[in-house]
Length: 502
Image 1: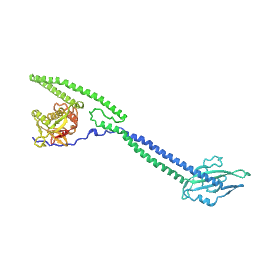
Image 2: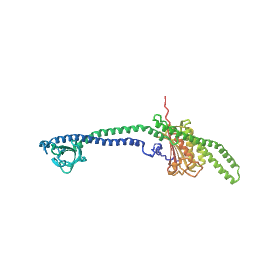
Image 3: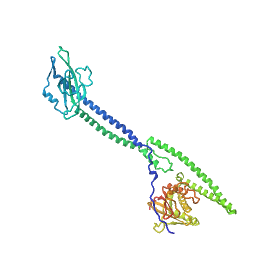
Image 4: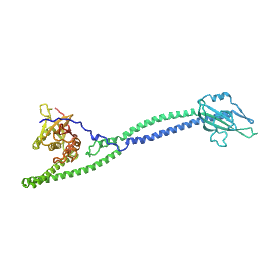
């Protein structure tokens, strides 16, 4: 008998490691936004308030100098009779107008608005009452033609109203105005703003980093809880352990554990019912099979014999289904965890099962054979040991061989091999039967799913194999056999070698 070509396929991705699509915004992002957004608003508000305070204090300083300048200029204008004597030397005027970047302009008018001395371009007083207070300066902003080039520049103006006269005539009113360029004042405000905002910005950045680190540290228990939940198998309903987490996370973990406990209780109750029902059905089904076999031997009417044959086939199929359900119940996590594990030589197990099923294969017209591994030092096949439950591993391999013998078809070849690949035990069963379309192969491991309508299977064999293999931290996979057929591989972790004390 020619031996079949063997191919190893890569292991598929771990479904538990695949991140689920996020159903909403990240909690980390929300906390960061709600903590940093107020800081940003406060930073902008602080910068605005700082600039206004700086401008106000700069205005106060400028207003103080302007107030002093208007009083000093007013002292240089002395009333004489009905006129005015102006004692304002040219040197003092040149000093006031010496700095083009910080211009100081002045105007004396009497009555107010009738120009006497200074610069005619100063803006008239704004928001001044009809009867202004004498001797008290008024301050306002205005614009004058620029010293160089076209356009205007902003100035800060102080206006001082004074009265004069010798008593023989009615008292006259004199307006003294002194203006100063706003460039230096605005530059001072900007420097105060920059000197205040830069340290404040550095503080905001440092606080942002601290907040980000604090949020990550605070949400770390949630990440660990998520990892614990994602790391669970779909049928693993054991409690989650998260003792060192904050009380809020512990409460969430306890709620999840309570839910898992309730689900586990319901699942166990359902499985116990299935197991008890299957046990109860085995005896009457076995009796029904025996009675139909006896009736078939004694039946002489062809029509009756045909009906009895159909009853016998139904009883056989029902008994097989019950046995499969019992095996599936034993393979569930709740049952598997209470069964003792031992070192199992899967190479020996495969040889023994293959030898046991040879008579059945011959009866079905199938060439069943075991292909030993040539890796032994003395020509014998080495042991390939895994740690597991012997009864369940035997049941898994028996189901694989049963499927191959049921569906390979007369004249096909079924070959069993055991090898070690990348520190894992690989049990391979190949056949040259009709095979299964590639798009249907993943569904064959689901319960009550069959790849063909031929035969009298119940669709639980490969589901049992997958359940048992996953309980042993392994995986099972299907691939096509070239040129025709199907190959099933069971991959299990090898048992650790015992330490020799010799």
